[in-house]
Image (cartoon, rainbow, N blue to C red; front, side):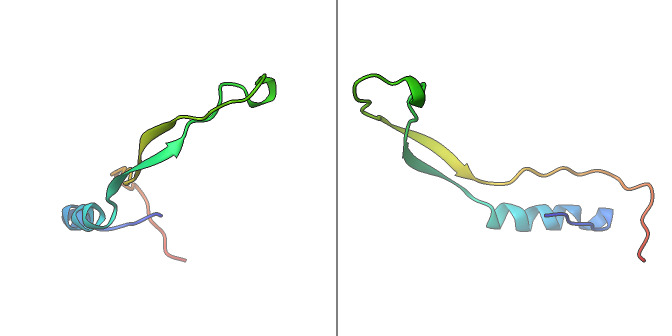
Length: 67
């Protein structure tokens, strides 16, 4: 997603993103070290991972053209 706003609206947009893009913990099966070379059986163990959220970059725009 790409969002372009005036500088005075940046904090408002970040607040909306924070409200919507929450992280959560998820339990998933860990992948074996090497699926191709596993001898015998592999009993996967579960791990907890964090999913979701957002990465936001705030940068200035030198030039903008609407065509």
